[in-house]
Image 1 (cartoon, protein in one colour):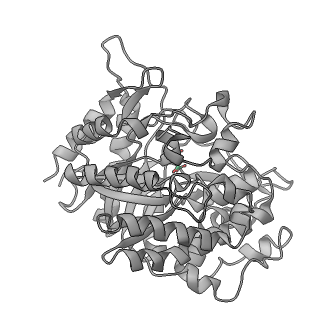
Image 2: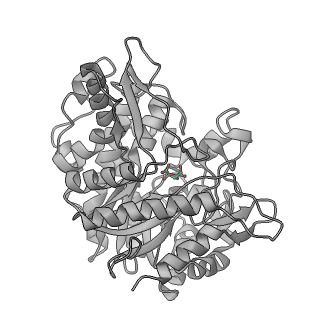
Length: 451
Ligand code: GCO
């Protein structure tokens, strides 16, 4: 097989997320989320951008489905906006919210596109943050009830369910680093939020299986290959261990090994007494899954610092994240397909599960050329090199089941607002015109060449 010919069962998709593309932020009963609050807080999102309109996908599903077919997608990964389903986070279900996703699922199935549904991609109802959000242990119950409402409504047609997208971002990036909603700066809170997110995941797994007989249940993590400096000292190697715990082991451990990784609790004892860990939690968190979603874009390079570096990740106070090696993308992320392969292989080993690449892609300063096209050659290079790396992983024995390009559309890139473009399809946010980029056509050609 050529480097870009994959097993016939390999699934080709693209991914999005509710707050990043839907818009219609106050329509049909949707309640506010923490990202509606965060994006309205001055200084939190570049340019003061919000998800109020985004790609207006809420009103443009038919045309976006045509784009999915044009790309030859076999699957589409999207997330459900919790605030559309339960505007207050718990209690009453908003039928208009259920109906929107039910129509989307029906239209996907009618188009021969398999829906991969993520239950939580960061848009927590603000009403729940008002009750402590992921710092409140009750969040596991709130999420289980929300899961029952969604899977109860869609489980007759949706098989592929993902509980959480990147709990690392929902906990450490949001409660320790503060770059994402709700924007706290407390490592101890971040550890508790991570635990409660994993507890919510574990509680939701049996709920999904109860409401969807043939469910394939998953979680999507965003692990990163942690790279040591050349000729690392013992201290550098300890920096790698600490960073690997914070980025990877914090979730691999409880979810797949029913235990926090060695050193993690000790290294963070100055931040929290870990009393949020209750007897039996790790058994709930490590509920058996059917596959693992891996979001990965870049590796992380670290070394030890003799003095505090300002690194907010728990246990990493003297870990310096060093400059990525060029070439980098428009996000400043190192382009390193070999590291992508390594972390995919590691994820499969840690989980013991088949893996889907649920996000991989690159941001570039795309422009519409005079010919009306978007000639994004850098994105094509990134796409091809990373697909080749996935193909190598498969050749070396890793069970990778599919690849979802991030993203179908240019969209709201969280704290970067609309300044970063990841889409296979260009979005003119003034007119909402969509333009399939050259990378979208390349992706369609790669999919079309499979046999
Ligand atoms: C993530 C999120 C996406 C991002 C994408 C680019 O992985 O951070 O799932 O919502 O937009 O990864 O940063």
